[in-house]
Amino acid sequence: QVRLQESGPGLLKPSQTLSLMCTVSGDSISSGGYHWSWIRQRRGGGLEWIGHISHSGNTYNSPSLKSRLTISVDTSKNEFFLSLTSMTAADTAMYFCARGRLWGGSYYWDSWGQGTLVTVSS
Amino acid sequence: QSVLTQPPSVSGAPGQRVTISCTGTSSNIGAGYDVHWYQQVPGTAPKLLIYGNNNRPSGVPDRFSGSRSGTSASLAITGLQAEDEADYYCQANDISLNAPFGGGTKLTVL
Image 1 (cartoon, rainbow over the protein chains, first blue to last red):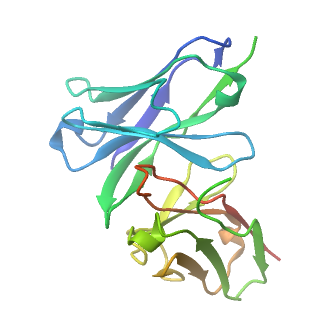
Image 2 (cartoon, each protein chain N blue to C red):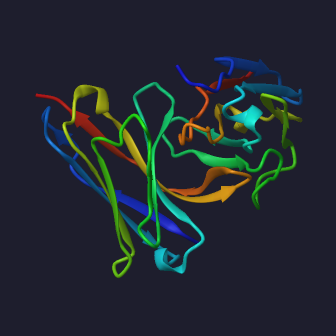
Image 3 (cartoon, helix red, strand yellow):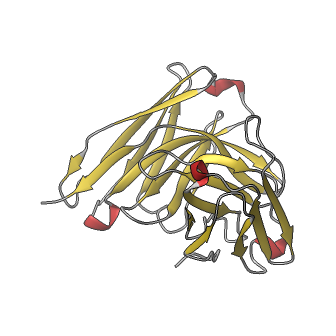
């Protein structure tokens, strides 16, 4: 059974860059067939897709975040990463990594990490 | 505000049937993109409930079913149980290369 685990700093100052890592176990990123994704959820709010990466390194980013966003992968370590620059209080949220599949033109996410809370505050 | 619109809340008594609607546009559901549904108990990660409009992953009870028609989709829950109390989100791709979620619906079991 696949497991995903996020890690990264819980607290950032405004304008800093967020760097998160997702460690995957029970499945190999390099095996293909899935997209490896980041999704966030602000407190009391809904879910927001951030972006995802394929095993070959092709990335697909949310139009609203793509100017600040980099998603990368290290298949040798079975890890993928998120980098989000110029963080503001509006980026304060729970960040989830997830495994995604394309179905009927839409991606869906069948396995999720437990999430990591990121707070942006001076 | 999400491009996929859900009612903020629904409720039902144990054993009853409830439905949660998800209204999109011609840029997402109406463009033929499949709809997926997630269940989230507060404080936990979302769980895939329905994929591809009406397919249940292994382990999801057949009390849960989905449908899609035109620019809308629905999630139906029959034989409501206390453990079904959670937030429910629909999600579909969009021609703007986005993958929006609905705003979420809080289900209360009375």
